[in-house]
Image (cartoon, rainbow, N blue to C red; front, side, top):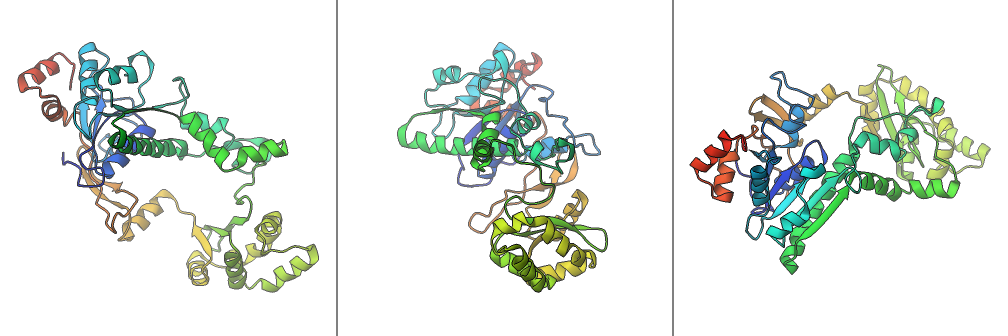
Length: 403
């Protein structure tokens, strides 16, 4: 397994003990920034080792993509000897080591007190479902912060879930930020950090920061679902002549002017403004009259196919995008020479599409690295980091403590 290429976190070592999305995405981000990230799983893999989607080989495409560039160690930390090994890895000496990132639950999780007893300046970022350790996942948290009842048509008040684990991904980025901030703080003060991040708190803070809680509190009622309309301005989907759909947004006055100009509806909307005493240069009025605006524009879109609309809308600098299914997204990503997506030769799978870091540092972006095979780095990490010899590692493997 190749070591991470140099980056701003080069030399930092992070030990990750986690599964699913939030913490693995945090660890992957830290690795993409140059850190050495050692993922620790129980022998046979964690609860996400075989999570869908799967490759034709049966290997998890989910696991392979969220663990790109990491090193894989298997330790049965449910056993006392394995627990001791995990603590030793997490608290190993060094200026840029002693960083532990986890979402372990229950009585078997490593506590900050245990880690700090070995290394007082340890950095421990722990992600949990709810404060206190009760379980929660993105789908349950998203439901309870009101988002599914703001999504969809609103007819019959049927909630509409979405498949993107947005709060998991936000939590992962927050956890990675906390690790980076704690490293900087330790270099300045010599002190470690105990950071606990609850998925439920991240979600509640997220909807509060959008002003949605303040809105409902002031109004005394919940906002109704609006279908595909964008709240607070004009934005909605339109059908095309070739049975495709496009999303069009007029967030700014310039975007509204561009949309009117390309559709040739300036006079119609001027008359509408006069008749209704409205100012459609104001985004609030565009939102208030969204259904009327959409009904005026709908025939123009319905009379043109997607290829024609692409030329017209791009030429007029309208803010828009076509709706694509995932197969179309693949084709578009492959056709884009600057895409973050590239093929990776993934052990256990073969050629796999994966993503590199979604930023360009000094105008450069590295190709995505493959994920390790489970247990691929156990012997090397235990030897290099803890100084165990081959005989001792063999004994631990024979006893089922490591894989």
